[in-house]
Image (tube, rainbow, N blue to C red; front, side, top):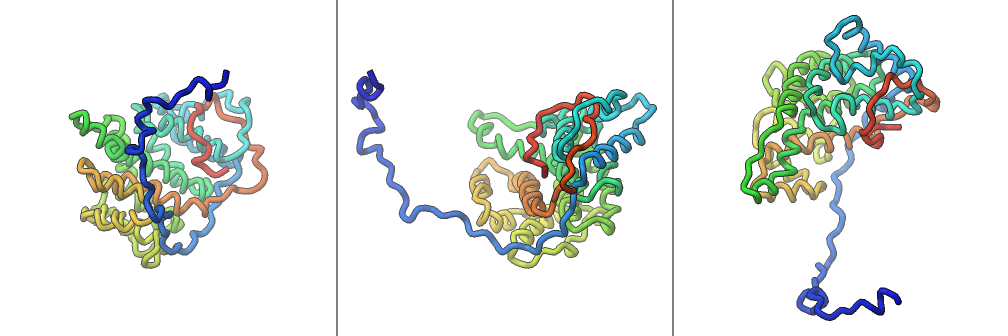
Length: 316
């Protein structure tokens, strides 16, 4: 007997004419994207063997011979690291590195302790430019962990009559990143435009908008009316501690999800502005990040590196 013969429609509320939904006419269309900004200078992430070697060398330089090694770095210093399975792509290694710092993007009690090491890698000119830009993007995502959570949970918490509280690991991580900002910003003149774009957003995300640490946004290639110009306007508003709603409204024309959150009575526009920064910035920069070449044989995987971060976040 088939399902069709035993199934009846009697009593189905949604089968009644009154429950029919009239489709809008005309149907909504995809948002019109603003004009594209000039492409960034392409930045290679490098071959896996070279990147792994440089990262391990940085770990040994900072923590070799000491007992105070962050948990997120220990796997890079394992004595049997040369006997693991090779990395096929640099993106795979960067996924493991990111996951060791913040498991699946979630800050833990060990994340803050690993931030100085991440900053060391970003400042290491022996590491390819594209990889350093990706690591800056990781810091940006970690810096906005709290506003991202607040935005995501705002309506649910309000419906339950609760009040959002920042996880302590998020706050410790953000403050650890803020402590590294002067060092990162001191390299502004030496960095690529793409790295400067991420660095400016990172500064805004940490709430470090003092005159001493305010990036020179006018040096970034962002013609008026482009999506990049709108993103930079949002960064500028955060740095200047100015209202962010105007910049968010402009961005919402091409990012409908922003409108949905802006309409919530439980939403802080400033939290929303910080929460959207990683997506705005890294989507803009993404096309410029390229693999370092065709040879992805790589180096042996150091130690027992944790897994979990989607490789899709990184170029392969």
